[in-house]
Image 1 (cartoon, rainbow, N blue to C red):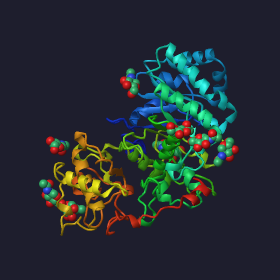
Image 2 (image 1 turned 180 degrees about the horizontal axis):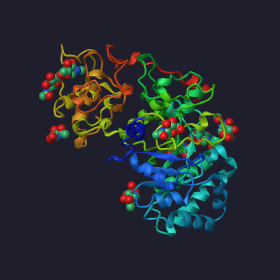
Image 3 (image 1 turned 90 degrees about the vertical axis):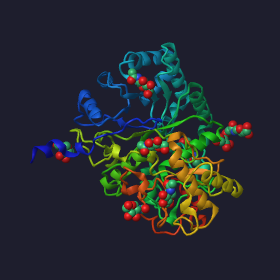
Image 4 (image 1 turned 60 degrees about the vertical axis):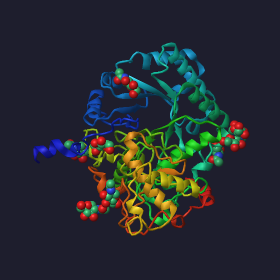
Length: 496
Ligand SMILES: *[C@@H]1O[C@H](CO)[C@@H](O)[C@H](O)[C@H]1NC(C)=O
Ligand SMILES: *[C@@H]1O[C@H](CO)[C@@H](O)[C@H](O)[C@H]1NC(C)=O
Ligand SMILES: *[C@@H]1O[C@H](CO)[C@@H](O)[C@H](O)[C@H]1NC(C)=O
Ligand SMILES: *[C@@H]1O[C@H](CO)[C@@H](O)[C@H](O)[C@H]1NC(C)=O
Ligand SMILES: *[C@@H]1O[C@H](CO)[C@@H](O)[C@H](O)[C@H]1NC(C)=O
Ligand SMILES: *[C@@H]1O[C@H](CO)[C@@H](O)[C@H](O)[C@H]1NC(C)=O
Ligand SMILES: *[C@@H]1O[C@H](CO)[C@@H](O)[C@H](O)[C@H]1NC(C)=O
Ligand SMILES: *[C@@H]1O[C@H](CO)[C@@H](O)[C@H](O)[C@H]1NC(C)=O
């Protein structure tokens, strides 16, 4: 074997992992430790550095890891284990001791920025529900006493199982068993400027959906025109189940009258190996999911209902946790082997990033399907006039003239304006007649700016998963009748 191969391996593919970007989106990673041959804390941190991982979540507050992370600049979320929640919820002094031992003593060298209190407490150990918010409060007060309340936020990761009917997102609510707990929980998050921690697994949404959802929808791949997923109430189009889960959570908070609490996805991923009864746990699927997840998160956009709030996400997880109980897939979510090589190629590289004025590749600003036509007309006029969008392609005889309707002409003009002016702070709004989408509206020779098939997208090399395959060649995808509304009743019965 050639030395290069030995040294290289997939490490080489994994050059630039997970970085922060200007407006705040980031992809971090979960570090579970139920691993035979877990590398030393120093080795783990060396791996993080080698892969430019800037955000990690620990499930506990392991002293070796926290020491090894000192001085690295990596932002760290520490965890109160489910076993510890009860004790902390019973005693302010236990909370204070926990904060002193596991947080205060490592700051500021180790950049601890959040405490995740338990893991899916309400759905996995419901008997701890009565003390969950109290535990969070006690921890917050301990931070306050140490003047660390601005540096360190307290929250608690929730399972998607909290939302029995997540589709359509606009009608999602938390299981009402937890109304009063969720009310207190959200009130706490709001009062302390914290965020909602969500574990969102399209893998389970897909596998438990028994074929209701196309796998492409779970894997962020383009959907065929007959299978677009649209929320019938908002007409928001959901290009991926991930976004739909995040939005279902925003709407569930809204149903309890809470707004302005950002969601951080504390876990998402896909297992790469499973048992005979787990045919979707494959390396191909895991590679597709995680690469597309990273790309989606780093494009900075929020989900359709909250387009300005990026979906900061921690991938689950760094290593395969072979010592976890449960099915075979349960042990095979890792991105890396313990020797530091990646399980499958991941491209986190900057070549996939949006640069300069080609900002927003893979993101489009289009007319809302239900927008008022006189507002659309004004928006179109403005974009092509004052807004200086290049509207020559929608003139008669030009590639984007057909379909000749307000919707598609406005979409073209909005998108052109948005892409040119985004770096100058332009937003996709147009009097609320516009929305952003990751579904490429290009068709035949009509290429929208930001399309991977567009010559204006500069340095961007299209990832195949976001490419225009399946959309190119069709005469138009903006005509609403092509969109098939999945029937909410069916979904409601089956759930995710
Ligand atoms: C820690 O992380 C916060 C949040 O991103 C950042 O503002 C701060 O500068 C970091 N501190 C250090 C010492 O790196
Ligand atoms: C809500 O949660 C309770 C308690 O876990 C459970 O018994 C019930 O089935 C859930 N409701 C729905 C609609 O899932
Ligand atoms: C729980 O809250 C929802 C709103 O999210 C409301 O519609 C429902 O009536 C409440 N249920 C109970 C039992 O309070
Ligand atoms: C939310 O606010 C509306 C309007 O103020 C009110 O009618 C509704 O009962 C509130 N819902 C909850 C769950 O508090
Ligand atoms: C790392 O470990 C994996 C799994 O055990 C193995 O397939 C791979 O060849 C190893 N890579 C190196 C460079 O040793
Ligand atoms: C971006 O656009 C601005 C204004 O149109 C221009 O001055 C600048 O040179 C462009 N930058 C790049 C990297 O193309
Ligand atoms: C406007 O777009 C057309 C193609 O649709 C292109 O040929 C033309 O050069 C563009 N004009 C400007 C000023 O960029
Ligand atoms: C991109 O540019 C190449 C060469 O300049 C041209 O052949 C091709 O048709 C263009 N593609 C699109 C989609 O405009």
